[in-house]
Image (cartoon, rainbow, N blue to C red; front, side):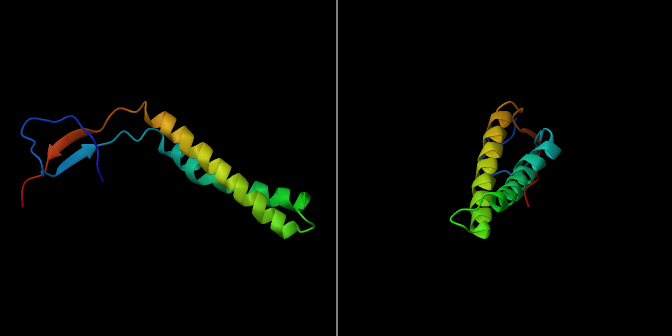
Amino acid sequence: MKLEVNAVEGLRLGHKVVVKLDTGNWLLAMVMMFGLPLIGLVLGAVLGQAAPVLGSRNAASVLYGVILMAFAFVLAVTYDRKVSRHLPPPTIIRIEPDE
């Protein structure tokens, strides 16, 4: 994993460091990344049962479920990118000793 952090005194290329990340509201992030697409999938499946495509309710459920799940996932990723810009950058807590 690569992160950009502000350098501290004594830090050289190749040193292992411990960083602190401000995760923001992790519960909201979990709901957005997992719950929202799941809700889209279920809602699409229910919608497919009510509005069949080409006479097939099962095909409509799969089609609508996948479309709504993908749409919800795109919304979640867009929201995450917007929110993550406002989080403070990671900070170095300590430099790990060489082994």
